[in-house]
Amino acid sequence: MKRIYLSSPHMSGNEQKYIQEAFDLNWIAPLGNNVNGLEKDLAEYNSIEDAAVVNSGTAAIHLALRLLNVREKDTVFCSSLTFVASANPILYQGANPVFIDSELDTWNMSPQALKTALTEAEEEGNLPKAVIIVNLYGQSAKIDELVSICNSYDVPVIEDAAESLGSSYKGKKSGTFGRFGVFSFNGNKIITTSGGGALVSNDEEALKDARFLATQARDQAVHYQHSESGYNYRMSNIVAGIGRGQMEVLDERVSQRRSIFARYYEAFNDVPGMNFQPELEGSISNRWLTALTIDPQITGVSRHQIVEKLNENNIEARPVWKPMHLQPLFEGVKYYSHEEENSVSDYLFEYGLCLPSGSNMSVEDQERVIEHIKMLLPRS
Ligand SMILES: *Cc1c(COP(=O)(O)O)cnc(C)c1O
Image 1 (cartoon, protein in one colour):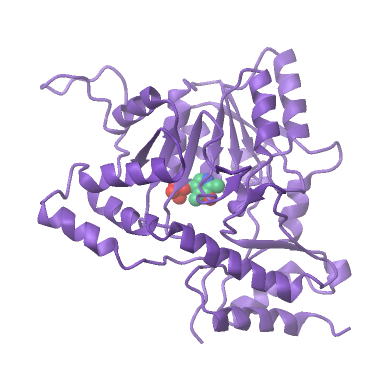
Image 2 (image 1 turned 60 degrees about the vertical axis):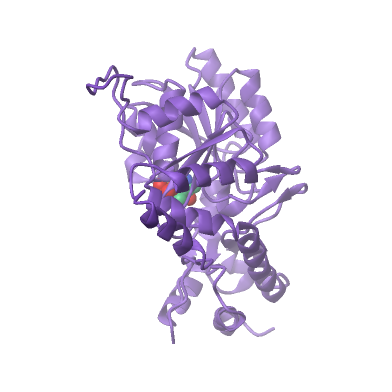
């Protein structure tokens, strides 16, 4: 039986046309038509002023922190329930992360916990330089509430939309709500360039600075002069060609992932103790990964048993992200839970499961996954 992956690359077929164009023009590097084209495609798709493409989503988050002048000993708030790439750039800057819990309506940052954290930070005279808000598995956070809380403290928002490209909230594209938005084109994301990312913003001046920092911060001079430290973060023109081919099918990929979600939902929504990640009213999730919780007391089977059984049958399934406040890397870091004595991200980590959700999965592949899970469910 062939392996079914959580989320594997799914090409449109047009990627090579753009790559060929780069070869024909010998525009292999630096930058070039595909880089400019992909930046334009992204800005247009998301109805935002500007996009700068870079070699990873992590690099885009790092640039956003640099642009917000995050330095050593500064504080940056970040969602706890996320992939480590959201938080690593805080460490690159020598700053101190503070992690914020999730709420159950979206699985994303709890406005209540954020409010508590900001109130305390203000009392201590140590407001964060930025708040990184993650949209998990494609679902937008309660972004209006979160941004309005941050605005009342004058703290800028970085929207980590690495997993939510193509999603929307109240009719506006995910990733466009903060001062900066971040997308990822890593191999497992909804579209991929094999590796890459983007920083988007309505602040075109800031994105000019981002491009400057991403190309070794070269001053205007023929003799290679530098006044500050930069990075080699720009996307290659070949890789950007893949991105252009992928942008052509982004909306199709969103509907494919949503259909996959719908089939899992149909199969398991009635099973007591199984609860799918909700879609907040007014938002549309790209359903990058179908995620659900399984309460073993009620369902009679544990998340762990399902992961094992699927893996034995050559099907990749995984627990939801391990929250940052539980990571050895961040031992001792401050954490604000949703309520006192109620950490929602701990709960989601303990019971949460991600099912294979790649847009290139066939209906038969998905039935194979569903059948293996059904075999574990107690007969009623
Ligand atoms: C994938 C991901 C990133 C990082 O993107 P890369 O392109 O892999 O560097 C950041 N944040 C989240 C939430 C992600 O899932």
